[in-house]
Length: 138
Image (cartoon, rainbow, N blue to C red; front, side, top):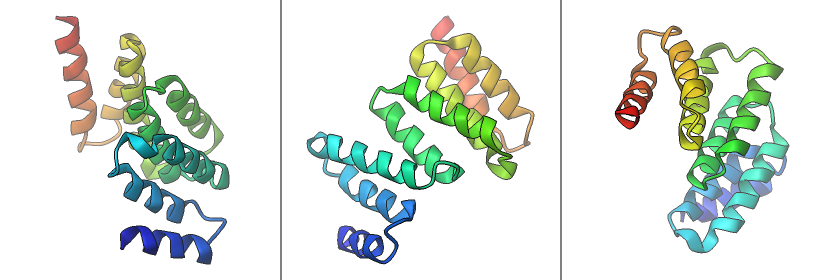
């Protein structure tokens, strides 16, 4: 049922990323069988709205799960450098930290997490990332 709603939304809004991401979420519950199709849909969503921070973060998160952290990091860096993120800056920095952590780039991950933690008092994700690095280095 959710998949049908997502597909109808795509018909109504063919140039918007959100309906495509809704469909991706539905397919993600089907497991690895649809992974290539879901990846293609994520890329389509990104191509439609490359400067939409929410879209970039969803695609970046998916790429990290697919073990494509280098690519995830690149699209987040492009977003970060391309425009003011206002209230999304913290989330982008945390995701960049996660991508670096997945790549074993601990010093870069620490930098991203530290920078993120200075932006808000609600910084549990950044603190958790730093704790994970600390545990890995032990």
